[in-house]
Amino acid sequence: MGRLSGGILTALGTVLWYLGGSLGNQAVVNLGIGSIILGIVAFSLPGWRCLPLDTRGVLSSSSCAFFSSLASDVGLKGKAFVIPPYENLPHGGIFIPVSSKGKPNLGRLFEGRVLYSEPEPGLLLSPVPGWRLTEDLDILGSGVGYASSAVSGVLDRLGLPGPKVFEEGENIEVYVEISCREFPYADPVLSAVLVALAAGAGEVLTVEDIGEVKGYLKLLLKRAGGVEKWL
Picture 1 (cartoon, rainbow, N blue to C red):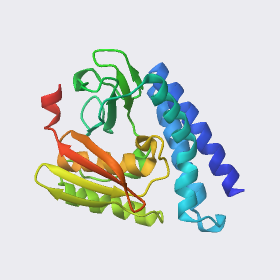
Picture 2 (cartoon, rainbow, N blue to C red):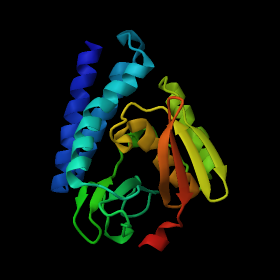
Picture 3 (tube, rainbow, N blue to C red):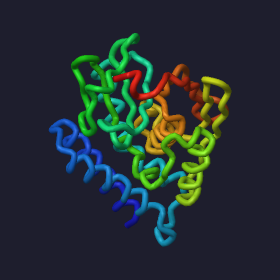
């Protein structure tokens, strides 16, 4: 019963999230994200006899397949930009341009809109799939270390492994376990971790490299300046 309910909520949430983004309807976007997060809850309740790994996998399955297909159709070639919360994107976001040299114009991005054809063609996840995992955290400008600890605490309460984060100068190394390998940015855990780190840094972060190390997804992030630099 729990497995069925969680799957239905997740699938429904993914559809609503995409439709809301396409139509520019924030209420539908929020309803979709809420349904996805309820899927986590359904699979996390003790009485439902589910393992934490299953929780993460089921949550990711629908959004992963959908956004993997969408990203492939759009032909994304640029590196990902992780954006901290600001006026246009109050929950932050992740933007991946079509061009390998593409860069976002934060003055032209808006929450709830998924695909952009101008000024820089690309795909925007905002809110990201895991935004409700960190929505109650007061981490904007708190520092990368504090943000990492805060999001790890939330994941731990859900029975999910937290990220391993190492900061050195302008670079940030992140190791995290995910279920969505085809399009990692659609993974709720990874998306929540990335936006939390950008919020803590108070800067846009670029994903300079991504790979796998001993079962973990490894990302090399680089500080790219505050929001005002990208407006």
